[in-house]
Length: 405
Image (cartoon, rainbow, N blue to C red; front, top):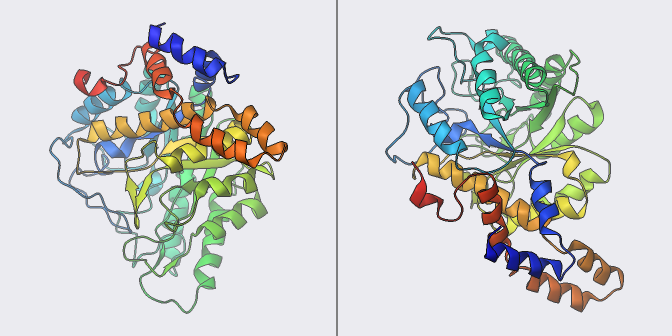
């Protein structure tokens, strides 16, 4: 232990916080890192593929991998700079098929078997995502809610295939895979029939989730959004829609992406409404800048507030933490590292909060003391404890940019 850490440990101890316990807890809470930041969500189907379906990766920074070999080189570099428990979240456009083209509705666990070997080697878990965009069967902005039966059937088959792949990950690695379903379906301008697409979406989801899968191996989540590019006026899969679907069917949990809400909404403020009913949540941590949802996550007040809310509700057992962003304007590996480390810093800040002191002041009605302590606690030396955490995991601390490969 370094002398700076010993000082920080003593400071926290004065407020009844055991930094060693916080570091122990850090190792029990994995962070699922999105694989698609490294290549702008191009995937392995076609390295010249263009994003469609209401999403875009902006920027032209050099260094985007142009082959699977280059991609794995970057992935190794990224994982080596992120301390602690990790998952890797894959999209279905990252199969390893030896160059054989496999239609998305015919993907099978064997097409991702090398990923399982990679995960075992790195000591990480795997999560999964169907890819319902950047494809000819995304017709006029519709997939699972499409008015065309042929289109819906294709994406239902894709969703079923992805659940089986997720289950195979969970069985092979011994921890559940979260298979997260997001679709871009919506309308650019005012829509008259808003109910029809949602009724079709319910039917499609029910078909995807018809076959029960042991939750020890696969947990399905459904992710809402305010809007996407080209579907600004109406989104079939909104937050309210998926909340109702999850709670009334029990077939999936809700995924909240922190960039998928109105800029004035607080995602942290929503969480306890789910915890009160014992509901699990999948979190996608990204950073919204005005209406753009996919900036690199940072340890800002919003991210820290989410972690503090989970901690205060004693609900880490109900939450799956993940990342979802892609920024092509900066070095892609570094962007992924910054996002992952920032979320872990926010998590540690919450675990180091003297929550019991705050709860006691609030319960006594001493609101002045509560506010004063909240402000004083912002300056406690969490960064020094994070550096200690990195050191224990053999990962560079705050000077990692100077040591990266």
